Figure 1 (cartoon, rainbow, N blue to C red):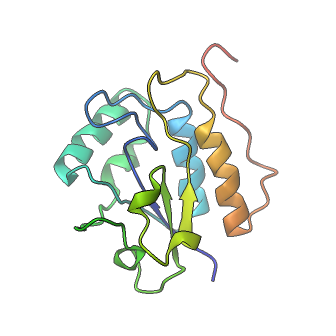
Figure 2: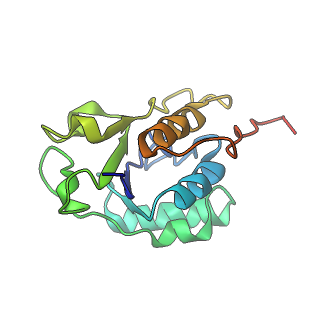
Length: 156
């Protein structure tokens, strides 16, 4: 089964954390690429939905994320792990993009796409989103001829 849903973590994956809210380098580009790659995107985060919405609005206003990012559905969950059956009853239809292995639900490790932690000191040359996009392309069977790495700060 080809995955059609991507469940996204927020802290340490797309941004620094819910306090400092530093966008990961290449965030806008990455979100546009995965928006085209998957039929559905959803947030799967420990951050409360209202807090996510305010962070997403700020990122969009600053030009760090597309406006549609504010409208992504949020998966409501509780417990210690992120069970992808909350994203789809058909196991295998959704992938989890997350930096933190302990949140992966037992038995769903094969559906986890690990992204390197975006942590302090938050380097401007962080390449984590470009790296993980190629992992996602491999997982979905898409050829990456039309995908180009994101320009880093100071590059044309």
